[in-house]
Length: 443
Image: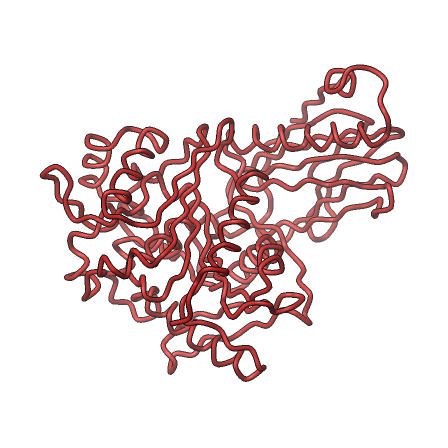
């Protein structure tokens, strides 16, 4: 059932009275940002903003990919046209109408079952002045992202080289530094479907490409799956480099950290063949489960990492200690049993050579600690009793443990930000990696 709500006096409320066209546009962009944060806090896992007119296209098309276990979805659409009327339509691949809305200013919410496969969203501003809009979707879904084939190459799995899954390699507009940026993938739901993994990887590449271009370095995006497993864990959460991912004996899922290193070697060889040499020490960035992967990989293999930026890493970032106040900290809480799990314990001297940046919004309540595919029940009790009951309350405790070991680690909490990467966060990530590439030494 659709709900239509008029948005009256938005510009007057936002900036008070008669304003210029540029001021109106700025106010509406701020409104998109505010609404986006609200949707994220409400659990919407996909958001997409649109700006139509004013020199850009007047019609936007989005394609939504729904996995077989899609279930029910919630859609929220808001738009404001400076004049005229904007139309919003959701259809199946064969053009069957699922939902629609039209108006100059307002929002609509709808709960429905999106059919498995491809669905289409059209936002038509051809009969309107400049249009500012935001779409949010809650439920298992991905959008399709389109990459420049001249700058992106798909590299197939090579079991003989040590990796069972493909990866994407992105080339910046101009290579200016001898490093490789890595952005781990994270679908947000259980799947091993190659099409869905490729779609997620393409969007990860699209989101992170501006950083690669800013740094002037190539980027790798692995396409690891998140397979379903029986029992309480429900999924083998390879995207978060969990304890189970180090223990599984299934060849194609086993030790994805080592498969990842094999990908790095393969990519370095491919780049060298094109005349681009990169350091064996990478820059790695991730958010949420990908942030867990990034920080845990850096803890497992610090000799392969120059700098890591990990945002909202699963409610608790792995810490570089085996014990704290008499409590043993097993992986992925800490590093107590890494010798038995991974065959080695990271040297403190190697960990101190890595630059660490952890970032979190102070309204971020996304917490993986209570979920069995991420942490055990014993881990949950240990973290909650010793370090706090929420990601924010645990933040200073994690910082204390990193600082106590003398690591080059920065922990930053961002006021008013939920489970998202804000503009300020992205600016800080950019500056962090620029500094790392300037001061980083070749191995």
